[in-house]
Image (cartoon, rainbow, N blue to C red):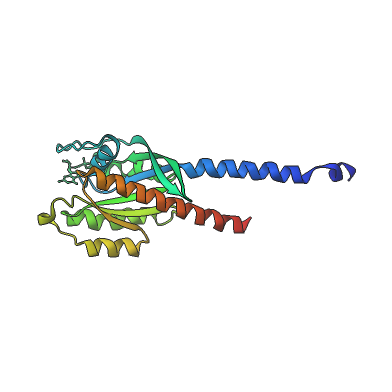
Length: 208
Ligand SMILES: Nc1nc2c(ncn2[C@@H]2O[C@H](COP(=O)(O)OP(=O)(O)OP(=O)(O)O)[C@@H](O)[C@H]2O)c(=O)[nH]1
Ligand SMILES: [Mg+2]
């Protein structure tokens, strides 16, 4: 009993508290992002634009998962903070769907991409979303790509937004040719994720 009495619990609490803080800030600043969606919706070109400010007209089918790293600066509580994104470009082709499941497990943000000129690619998002339904604690975003091709539009902005609301996701329309739009969308998504993460942490703390 004596030994227990002599033990400095205050010290233990402080240590644990700082460990939790370190763990929290590490987790908070490293964000796993996954792009999902049918073939040719523009996933690879969105990343190409974000990372290299480049757009390629020629289609090269993605055959395996490619990881890209990008740091994004956001304003948080009046400070500028750097967030490290690991962005996974996944193949849209059906034969690679099993690879996708492995990557979904560790993701924090999932971007569900469709092509606004291709109705099929929009309908398929229902199936992609089914894969995620069991996954909690992820931020979902629906992105309608190729909005430079307005004359070929098959899905209205309103339908895109309604679907996003229904699955509790953020919604954006953009095109992979426009660096400013792409950069702006990722900054907004990461800012939203920070708020989402804070809420999630507070909720978890209530259970401790
Ligand atoms: N006009 C226009 N073309 C685009 C846009 N985004 C992508 N493309 C074109 O659409 C085609 C497919 O783009 P990718 O980025 O390779 O499509 P993906 O979703 O990665 O396709 P998979 O790798 O098969 O899953 C390419 O020819 C691109 O140049 C866009 O915003 N506007
Ligand atoms: Mg691709």
